[in-house]
Length: 356
Image 1 (tube, rainbow, N blue to C red):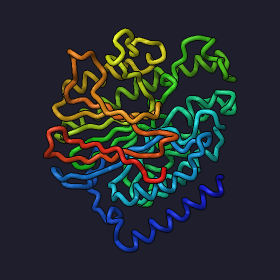
Image 2 (cartoon, one colour; image 1 turned 45 degrees about the horizontal axis):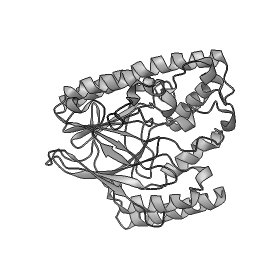
Image 3 (cartoon, rainbow, N blue to C red; image 1 turned 120 degrees about the vertical axis):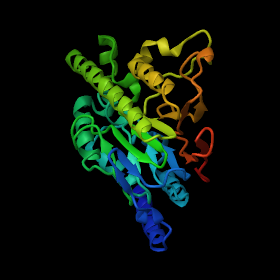
């Protein structure tokens, strides 16, 4: 299966190179105007389109044969860039070194830049016995060194990114860039409750972790949560300084946004989601004090959703929108058009890939 997948990727790369030779990959020639806070590749006020995808490919769902079709479909859409919101493998396969290099190969099959945001399957859950019983913090360090060894994005055309940490080191995975009238923020906030562990039973269930490793996980969570909040708050300050029309935050974990859909249970109060509470409270505060539109994009539970959740209905945050991307076995993507002349700035279109 791997040979078949790699063969299809080679064909897609060759096709993309041919398109570029014909001048259809004009992104490679786009003049990127560096600013002190990132990249502005289109003039203010001009519309542009980009893609959102994640939680794929999963070997257990036999997603491999569908990936070349997805790449071809997104390449044909002439996107400015795309954002992958985590999970380059499924949650019951080994966290071997080749998983990360295969992910890079997939991203580099795209003609436009690809920005990678980490998911739980590539580090948080690697302690699980069926993942190989790795030290998940060691896998996080490996991810940072391999997936964030260069400052720019992936893709055949790359895009400069600003990073919170130094290359290959802690918090390098938190990124920021400006494109047109929007500031984009990528954060390491994965599934499995953001790597927060409650007790010894949860620590060792289907896992090779020790209590000492779980204590280290909780310390890691606390430090990273503070850095995520800091990077997010700084990004709102950048958006205000640049008079941005919108700000998009992208991470992988589903923070439990069902309330108020289920009236008898507030999922936000359940232990399974308390690893996201401090960040969401800080995000709510920043959103209330921002005049533009705010979009939170995540993956994790693999159902396309577009709504305005987060707080009780009488306290609706009118300028806040949540989008959850497709995920395995539904190998599709979401097209987002930014049009600063629109009242809501962002237009979202679920793109069902023919044949997938």
